[in-house]
Length: 130
Image 1 (cartoon, one colour):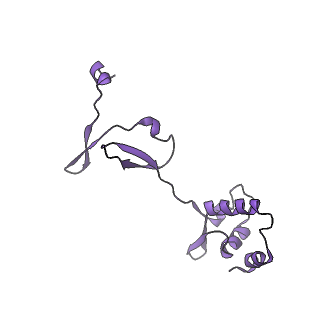
Image 2: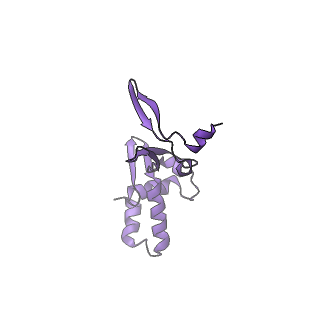
Image 3: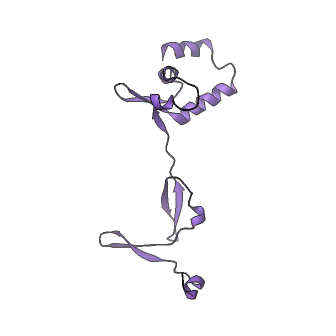
């Protein structure tokens, strides 16, 4: 329990060993700004305090794992979407194809917004690849 003077005049700065032989100072973070769950980095502010910043990364999954998402798409369909250039994908190793999940969701939304999305040219690209 903090003493009455600490609650009235909290210690704004404390030292910490940030590397061997290197002392740094930090200010306590505002816990209301820290996300309850997530991956974030600390961004240094001009006043010496730090602000949590959510680290956003694109989600890449193996096609076999993406097939398990509740989207109703088989691995064969996902392979054809990548091969046809409709969705970003990559083959980082032989027999291992990964797919960008956010791009897949973008493609699904695009198809939902445009009922005439599948033109004959796009159908041909889907069937035969690029």
